[in-house]
Length: 258
Image (cartoon, rainbow, N blue to C red; front, side, top):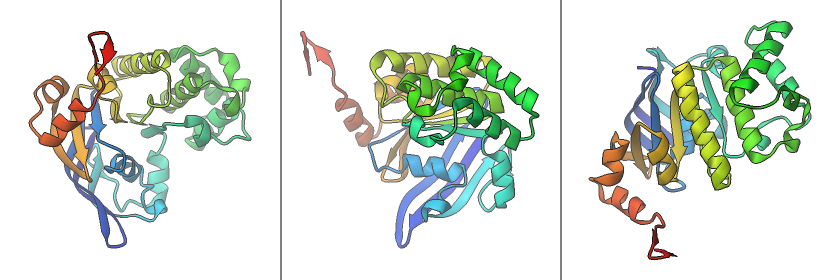
């Protein structure tokens, strides 16, 4: 098992926002984590990266990467793991990049931080951009000069260049138009096939989850209320909340949106 979460509790002061009993993501597997806004999906992702405490959260339980416990690990170990073993792409990647650095500088700084020589960093950046079907010339641009789809591809390319084993995609397609959204979904599926990377795909878009994910976990008020193979959960949901989520998805019927 690549990523294993057990008895995870996240709180702010006296308020507990996440009580997650169990969530696993195996190597080469894409697992969807779905639920409405405020259900605890994003703070769970930050906890995996060891960043929830920086937001003022209290985190207990167990998060293991290949059997290595991350909760309570020294900051130096977490810095080593972030990027090189676990990477994350955000809903608005442009705002996650440092705006004063060109894309190439962002790659170089990240790769050098994890031990690559300058020459090796340039080579890996070039190769990673090619893998996500972006031209090498994009490295000369600033983040604000990228389109939404290009920015998401650059974020994925950075994870590829760092050779991350786990990729957390937090609402990575929700801010994109339908065409670009489809391109990102295809890219993530291809990345799983080529690299065997484990992906935790956080989304409220059940249509995208249905296209991409092998399994899905449904989160409500910080708890997993249903989990299983994606086809089974989306077509034969057991929990009333899951049925409500699916019923809320707009459908085209008789020439109009239902």
